[in-house]
Length: 390
Ligand SMILES: Cc1cc2nc3c(=O)[nH]c(=O)nc-3n(C[C@H](O)[C@H](O)[C@H](O)COP(=O)(O)OP(=O)(O)OC[C@H]3O[C@@H](n4cnc5c(N)ncnc54)[C@H](O)[C@@H]3O)c2cc1C
Figure 1: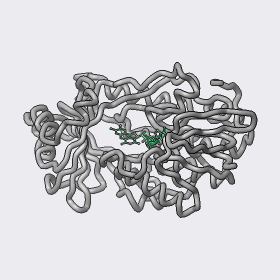
Figure 2: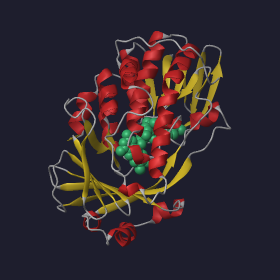
Figure 3: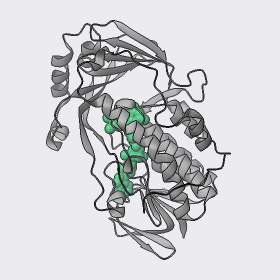
Figure 4: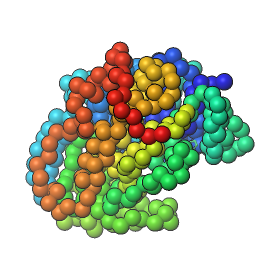
C-alpha cells in the first residue's frame, strides 16, 4: 500500500510529494488532467519565500532554470510618472530571487523533477470519492479505479473535491470584484528584464519584458464577475477592445502593449478564506484547496510551496497523522489568512489606491525569523500548544 495518496498534480501536490520523499515517505500523485496544458498559458511570479521553500526540497535550481529572475519593482501612476522603485525580496541571493514563469511551466518543472526522483504521477485520474477506514484511506476515481494509502492529501485547487468531502458545508470561493487579463506581446516597449513594471492607473497593470523582447503582461480590472459562457466564448479581439477603451487615455505604455498582444486570456479573481476544517482523521487539504488569496499579492503559489514543506516536516516529526495535521494547521492558519486579507484589500475597488506610495513586498502574517525556522528542513517543528479543526 502507498503510504500517501496525493490528489492534484499542481504546485502544492507535486511539491508535497518531493518534500515527503525527502522526509522518507512514499507518495503517489493523482492528477485529473490527461496532460499539463490546462490553463492556457497564464503566468505567475514566485516570491522569495516560495523559492526558499523550494530550496528546502532541493528543487530551486530546476525552477530557476525554467523561470528568469526579477530583482526590482518599478511603479508608475496612470500619468506615467514613476512613484517608486523598490527591491524585490531577497534580490541579492540568486537562489531565492523572485522568478516568473507560466503556471504550466512551473508544474512541468516540478513534475519532471518528481519523475526523475522516481515519484509516480498518474494522470487522467479525477477523484470522485474518499472512504476512510481503520488504518487507511481509499480514493475512488472517475474511471472506476481505486487507490489506497495511509493518509490522503487534497491538493486539488480552488474547487477542491477533497474539501467538500471533508466538510460538505465548507465555504465556496468568493468573487473578489476583479477580472484578470493576461497577454503576451512582442517588441512593444523597452525595460530591464529583471524589472517588474507596475502601472497603477485605470487598471492594476503589470508587465515584464523578457531578454527576447517579449512582453508578458496582466491587467486586473474592477468589474462584475464574467459568466462562464463569456469566459469560454470571449475572443482576443473582444478582450483587447475592452482593455483598450479603459487604458487608451493613460500616458503609459499599457494600451500599446495590449494592442500588440497575439493572444489575450481572461479569468475572474476569487479567494477562499476561513475554511473551518482543513483535516478529518486521515485526510487533509492544502494549497488553494484549503486557502486561496486573490491574485493581487502574487503569493498563492509561494504559499502552496510553503504548505508542502511544513506539512512534510510535520509528518516527519509527528508520525501520527492527527498530531502532524494539528501541528501543520497551527503553523499555517495565521500566515495564509494574513495573505488572503492583504490580497483582498488590494483587490477592493478603491479609487485612492493608485495614488499611494508602494512598500516593498513583505512576507505576510508571521515574523520572518519564525517562517525561516518553519521552512528550514533541519529545524524540527515545535508541537502545537492548541489544536483546531477535526
Ligand atoms: C489570475 C491568477 C493569477 C495568479 N498569479 C499568481 C502569482 O503571480 N504568483 C503566485 O504565487 N500565485 C498566483 N496565483 C495563484 C496560484 O496560481 C495558485 O495559488 C496556485 O496555483 C495554487 O496551487 P495548488 O497546487 O494549490 O492548486 P492548482 O494549481 O489549482 O492545482 C490543483 C491541481 O489539482 C487538479 N485537480 C483538481 N481537481 C481534481 C480531482 N478531483 N482529482 C484529481 N486532480 C484534481 C487540477 O487539475 C490541478 O492540476 C494566481 C492565480 C490566478 C487565478
